[in-house]
Image 1: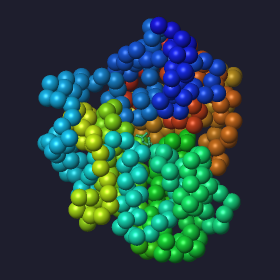
Image 2: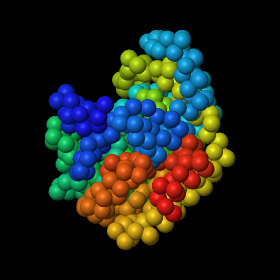
Image 3: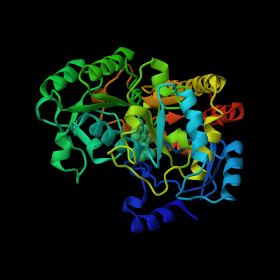
Length: 419
Ligand SMILES: *Cc1c(COP(=O)(O)O)cnc(C)c1O
C-alpha cells in the first residue's frame, strides 16, 4: 500500500481525507502517513517506514503504544464482552482509584471524549447557577462543542464571534473571550455581566495552541473572582490531567476548581472522557438532578480497564523519570537546531513531558504567537519525517514524551539527528 493512494481514496469518502482536521497535514507539502501498526515509542506506516512518534495520539499514550500491561488487560477484557449498556464494576474500580487519589473530586461521570466532558461540565455549570454566560480564554481549546468554538469578537466586554460556521450568533454571544492573563478583562466581564456569568473555563496549562504556561497567581485570581461572584470555575485538564502529575495542574498549583474535565490519558488510548467535582454539584446531573446527560457507550468496559491499567502505572517516580527523559530529548532537539543554520531560530519550550518547538519564547498569550509558524515548521517537519521522527503535523501543537521513549529510543534519536 502507498500513502498517497490511500489518501486519494480517503479524500473521496471523508472530508479532506481525515476524521479529525489536525491529522490532515494541511499546509504541508506531503500527504498524511497512513499508520499500519505501532509499538512502544514507534509506529510504522503502510510503506514500511518506521518513525519515533512524538505525537502519541495527541496525548493519551503516556505509556507509549501497546504497553504490555494495558494490552494484557484489554485482551482479558475482550473475552468478557465489550459493551453491556448496563451497570458493571469495571468503571467502579476506575472511579474508586481516581476519587481516592484526586482529593477534590467526590464523584465522576464517564463520557466518551474530552469534548463531551466539557460540553457536559458547561451545561452542569449553567444548570447549577441558572446563568448563561461563559468566560473562555483565547487560545485555550476545549473541544468542538458550539459554545467553545468562539473567537474574540468586536463587541463589548469580551463578547465573542463564532469561529466556525454553524455556530449560532446567540450561542456566540454567551461566550466571553479574553486573553490569558487579562485580569482587568475578567473583572470588567464580571462587572458588565453581573449575575449572568455561570462559569469561567480555562486550560490551567494551555497546551493546544503552543505551550502557554500561566502564572499560578492568575489561576488563583480566577478561583477567587469566580467564587466571589457565585460563578463556577472549570479546569479543563484533558491534556494536563495525569500528565502534570496525577492530579494535573490542580495538584501542581493547589488550586481547586469546582469542576474538572479529563480525557486523553484517562482512557490510555481508548475513548474516555470524564467530568468530576464535589458531590453536591455532580448530583445535579440526571438521574438525580435536572441537568440531562447520557451515553450509549459511556464507561465502556474495555476502555475502563484500559484506563485503569494505564493510570495505575503513574506514580511519582514515573513522572520524575518521564520529565528527565523529556529534558534529554529536548536538549537533543536543541543541539540539532543549533547545528543547523536554517533552524537557528528554533527553541524548545518544555514542561513536564510536553514540549513545543517554536521560534518564540517567554510568551503566555495566544495573541503573541506569530501566525506564520508554518514557514519554518514545514521544512523541519519534512526533514524529521524523512529521518523517521514524527511530530504532530502542525506547528501550534505540542509534542508528547511517553514511558516508551527509553534510553534505546533516545540513543536512536541522537543517531538520526547526528548529535
Ligand atoms: C483534546 C482536548 C479536548 C477535546 O477532547 P476530544 O477527546 O478531542 O474531544 C478538550 N480540551 C482539551 C484541553 C484538550 O486538550
